[in-house]
Amino acid sequence: MTMATTEPALDEVMAELRALEDERIGAVNQRHGDDHAVNLTRLRAVAKRIKKNHPLALQLWDTGDSAARLLALLVCRPREFSRDELDAMLREARTRKVHDWLVGYVVGKGPHAEALRTAWLEDADPVVASAGWALTADRVAKKPEGLDLATLLDRIEAAMADAHERLQWAMNTCLARIGIEHPEHRDRALAIGERLGVLRDYPTPPNCTSPYAPEWIGEMVRRKEG
Image (tube, rainbow, N blue to C red; front, side, top):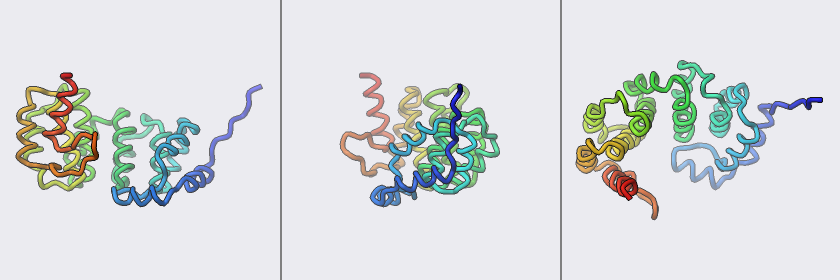
């Protein structure tokens, strides 16, 4: 006899997320542009127990709650979203972690990544544009065929210094990825990073790599070359 399985109800999952909230985590997250107070390791444990559940993911997203949306991004099925749904979700995802997980865990894993990458790169909203640059940085590292890296460097050189902080961070990541992965463009990437000085003074914990592009490129190249 097959045992019936019980689908988790939205109110039960939301109550579980509320029970996981920690004021100390919330305070730290607020300083970094996030508004949830749930330990992410515990959140991932909830997702692992629920497994993939796209209908529940849609319900969680619609709550507008950041912890619920992060859980939604872990239990959804990326290929079941349409391009328009993903575009709308990105424009709703204003907190950093929800934005980053949506781009990295869902958009980047689905069939609409390239179409959205090119569209978002040209968007007037700098937070939306930052998603296009994040997807571009990922492609620079993993699938650069067809990208015009010299033109990307031109755009970074012209716009990064004065860009919105979220867009600036994504462009800087793309600059570093070009320098790390493509030796033929490394000298120019280093020169751009040094001249613009973006994130030069970013506070970096001990044993962590600075996001300042020249230091980031240099450290990662040293690791690659052993």
